Length: 385
Ligand code: GLA
Image 1 (cartoon, helix red, strand yellow):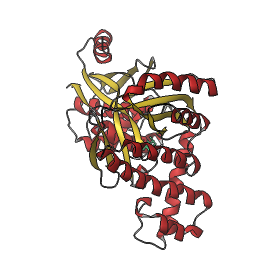
Image 2 (image 1 turned 30 degrees about the horizontal axis):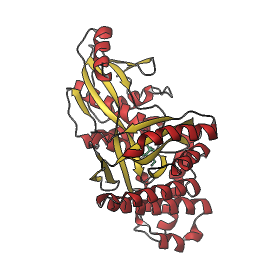
Image 3 (image 1 turned 90 degrees about the horizontal axis):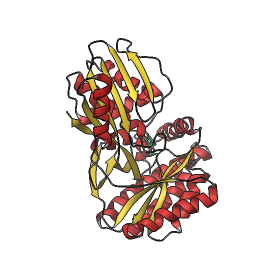
Image 4 (image 1 turned 90 degrees about the vertical axis):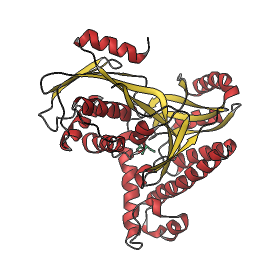
């Protein structure tokens, strides 16, 4: 039985009602890391690993939520407009419900059953997937249809305002707007997306380091603060400067004395990374996969040295991959401090790659990585409307 069919069967057994069913995918980012909240460019793809929410209304004002993947439940009252955070997975549901109600969308009491295949806390946006699938479920049950772009924005706001993670729009956007077989280049200022076909001669292979360093959330907000500090400092002299997106390397160098060395390096990463995304889009259009691979390695190096969001395990995974046959490029993906790498691997070398990355990483770290051979999938929507 598929995960979706199983979820529906379990829902009927538990709640004795026919549910509606919604799906939202996780994502991998090919290139363009820590650029979204600088109004820059990113190039993610939605994954064929998704979260499903089965839901049916219940005649009261409570949301009862059960996660099969985590074997955990939670319940809260919709009349509590900003329910207290639990600091766990259920905050994504609470946050989405709170933001939707604050925006004036009517919600009804309901039972929600959640399951999914997006590895949790691994940098593949399991949080965006649960947020988006929950938002679709709650608004549909509430009898309203909101445009997908608004869904993405409100889910980002839930994460920013409710959980306190000051993330950009990338994850929620691609979870909503992914396209099968395509990556998308997103301009995070205009929110204009360009779809780029991924050639069948290569596969996206994701390698999970199996570590997640605890500093992740605090360090993420700290990186964002660095960027904002720099824009403020240089903005005193260049009043048109709105975000790091507007700055070039020359200008950064010119104003270097206004910045701490750390903030300077953070800016250098963002500016160069934006340029790499544009380069990679051009390279993908003319199927120059070798060039994309080079750009991925450069991105990783910059995230490690200038942005300082990599870690030993991610570096080892990239290094091991870089020595294997058929690997065009490899880099950390997502926020960093553990989680996953993304590898561009020639299809014909796939089985050798998956075998050797496991043994190579194991030999260096003593950890057994999980490897997901992925394809780019459609964005979120109703499976049973
Ligand atoms: C996390 C955030 C995104 C983005 C990446 C880094 O995934 O949710 O908005 O900032 O980190 O590129």
